[in-house]
Length: 517
Image (cartoon, rainbow, N blue to C red; front, side):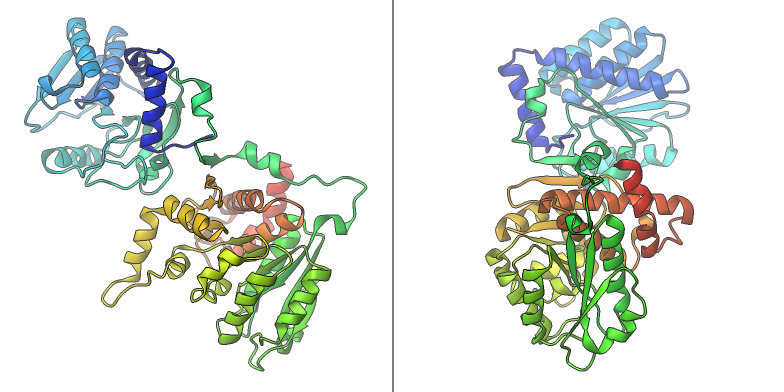
């Protein structure tokens, strides 16, 4: 399903009215019908309080109020603003509602509002809000949240940015949201996702040509699309058909990252996996692998890779590997920085770069634009901040830098992808996948239990495996992120979020793929 910004939805609305000849009042009537239908579905009582703003969102609320009133609900409408400041369509619905006999209070001063026993319909602001909610209105929003009454938001919870999910000053926290045409980015980006509650998307008459347009670049990654991407496995196949992943990972004290990446490759379906590791650690690795192979590489004598390893890496990649997975646990040194720089520019196969592989590139980001083969990077917000050269200045907390990235999660991933030509998997909640062509995918799987050491190493292995099995970089990243999160969800149901560890995600990959394929 496509996901839009406020501006994109406004344009769809405009074209629907101007070019297709569907009157705005017809769209508003159908929006109100959808809201009323949802209220009837989820409202346990008969008392409904509809809070309306002065714009078209308020008009939607007035339609819903009229329909519910006609069906016997005890409806009260509170208009938050002046009656003479209503939009043209909202004013039409206001007078229609008045004639129907609905109790409507126009509040210049909000004061106290009786919320006891009410089901609240929030039709105060729509998707166009761009200024912070302050003063009496902010106080009202806080009192609604504190009262813990059931709330249904119209289009998007009032106070939430439709584009970033940011709380603009203060916002109403909903249990349900009915949105129109297409979901908005703010429904899935945090903290907006927490305010949205259960989301219902209703097409109120927008032409399918508009809501399925290729011009809308952001999509939600759901189970149907994910299932369609899982590679087939013909009966008359052999291991060479499913790719050979070359995993360059691990250093002294950090061997687990390499092992988890390799094991995730195997569980995702790779035919062959070779671990390229510092030669002084070969005995450690050899005693812990079963299906994977080991390639010793020159090291500095301290369990980290030597630059001399590069020629062996390139030789192996050109002869045997289908993709290279690099970064988990390799450490950062002048040698790893030089290896990463040359590998990006000369690798004959696609690269999936994570962790210290990314950190080794932070001083030479421009070389990503000159990559010989496709590159996928999988940073978390901290690594993304380093790649963007926005490490905290003196006196600035790291959390503030992360907040800056989180507030612009989609635009950050898209701009970096387009500037460098790499595929970006910006990990977090939700994880965003961005392609150089501008395509963006919002993941729908995963849980807080996955915020644990090694989870990213597992994701790197899953994506690398899918590339080795023949998926293009974008599909491998999108499917890999979805599988990773869904396996984590399955693991959390059994282990619980507090006790979930990265190897649990690997364990549940097989069930995840089996039931989707």
